[in-house]
Image 1 (cartoon, each protein chain N blue to C red):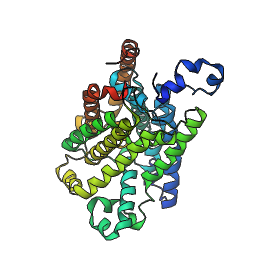
Image 2: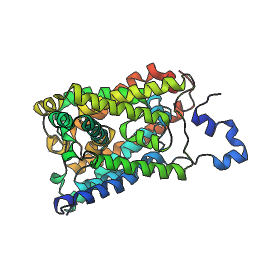
Image 3: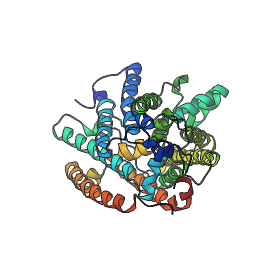
Image 4: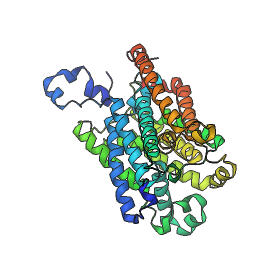
Length: 197
Length: 190
């Protein structure tokens, strides 16, 4: 049954309409969480406000549990879902660069849109920087895409790679989220009132 | 006091009644928003078979702009060509998703009284410095996202929910770099 894309042939227009509707929810959530503010986002890296981790981790676990339950009920074919190939070198190097850009720039690509929508001029500059970045990538290092594919380790979903069923992983992540929520409350109580460093 | 927007909105003067009526509403509980965001991600998976993304939308605009100068160059370039879409690069799924996100964030911001033309920064740097750092950070983050094939949306959230090994490694690398550099850019934020 799910994903619908495997049984229904959406027209290009329908696909874009779906993108607009899903985007509405996406942007609404980001702004509701306070992610249109670079100060709110970056305060996670000074342990003042752990909202970034709380929202991201909860979202991941919620979707993971949903996918697991629907797959177990036979309503979803997990093999029909797109999975990006893993390339550890690319994910580590790219991730380190991305993290550096995040703490210096104050946003990530999605949250910069929420920032622009609520009038943050620095969000606009971040987005312009992103545009320059993807443009430069295409012009200077167009071969990196082929390198990624050639050196990728392939699709590595942890349930298949470890032989531990997705349900156990999901249960483990739920337990870890509960533990992390307790830990983050402690961290915030300790650091939220801290001044300059 | 500082001139940044957070202080203007929530500083001591916000206690004045006339100000308080227009004060921003509080953000929602992060765990509640997390569940909602997770449901948006789940719905995206169930309908399209793919998850969310953001960086591809920027790449589509880059392909479009490059095409204004030279469509031949776009087709010949391996990266631009991926987003060319037969000459309609702006009809890109992720770009439309970002358009919807803009409207969704705008509606949320209006309801929460959080619209403000302002610059997000700490009290120890100028607006100009902050804007320059925002541009530089955006550039580096985009380059990293292109190398890693995804950003916080496409790799961390989307791949994380599927327990994709590369996505989880990406997420660890992002937080490692950001926490590692936080002390050195503290004057930008604190």
